[in-house]
Image 1 (cartoon, rainbow, N blue to C red):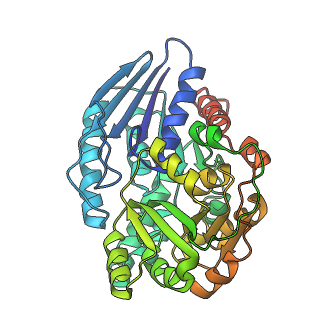
Image 2: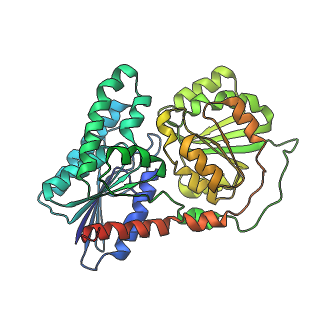
Image 3: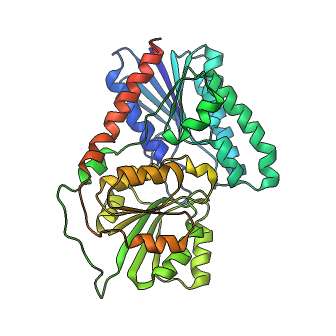
Length: 397
């Protein structure tokens, strides 16, 4: 059996796609026959412009071969990302030339990796398993200016339709995607393997309840956000005013990078906000230490209709750590937080007053979320997904 895995991100890159695909490949390696071959085509670490990590262009292990493609320097703009993906697709095309695979797995947030996987599958008459992590054809309407989106949205919608119809199986990372995809593709089979909690966060999960704490006279609560700072997260649209309103009660610590970091820095400077600390992306061991010192973990998505369907991967690691979760989300993500994560507070995205009032609902303490951890351990989800992929490869689905 030969399996091709296409993922724009893979270890040691810092992204939800990297963590997800790495865990899945590890699970596949444990389940495939001894004579199976798994080829992973990905990129050298590129998630953040300010973060670099050493990784070999070619890496070979028993039954697995990883090929990493060098990308040109790029930021988060659509043009830069298009150039980067074109380089990736050309490199991937060279890698698969003359090869045949039994099944192709492609995981995609911005759609085009799924399209590339569909193209390869058609050329090779291989089975295709798509892992859809975002509804790009829907999201792009909110992210781009209207004069641009009305041109490109129909194109991406056609590409989405073509890729989905080529797939033998499609996994949707959020159950919030169900209505969108089921309405458009009623004959397609969908599974719902979500993101999950990686081993590092399982090990760091608290095993006992701490006492509630009150803000000390000499120390505000530390509110931490770690992740991307793009238009989708909308930190530039909430943090400056929210930090100003919260004043001495909290100290925001924001770790990461992205296309809107500069806008956030500018807004903080213009408003004279002093209770926000911006830090570059951190490796996971350092990030875990930062999590441990935080009092509250913060999450925010911009106020776009498309984001009412998503389920941010960040929620899983936040919840595992037992810290209070303060989330500016709507739609499915808001329902998930309220039903699955205790000691959480949800406010409407970009609504400063709602955020301020919701903060007081939190109890500042560490508390184990054992049921959540058991339900969403990444290793279990990855194993189940790997089994599903192999069942499709064997024609059992």
